[in-house]
Image (cartoon, rainbow, N blue to C red; front, top):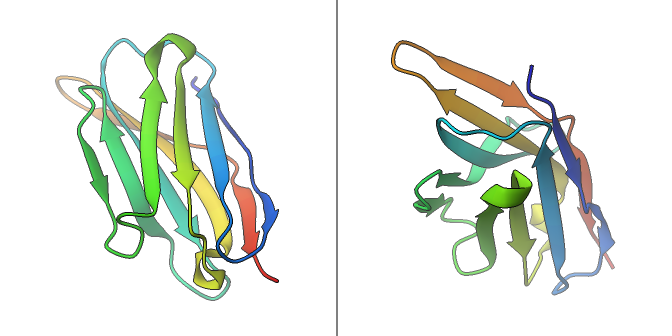
Length: 119
């Protein structure tokens, strides 16, 4: 069983920066995709960014140019660098891992970390 542990959330002023980390409990050698999602109060969970094991990245339009997803495979960790934060970025941020096998995809979620952007 893979466990994902997020860290790095907190309170930041508008325009500030935070870096989130998500560490997997085991080394993932299979083809995989790691994601960051977020969920604001009263809203549905939404995809923020994703990165494949080959390093291909995709972003939600709302964060393009401000957020950067990256990964360190040696540390089994994915990062989300968040710059120019806005109050509307306030949410619980979740890490997700999809491990892709020939016949199935196994998905794992972290417990979430709160990001609050407020003056």
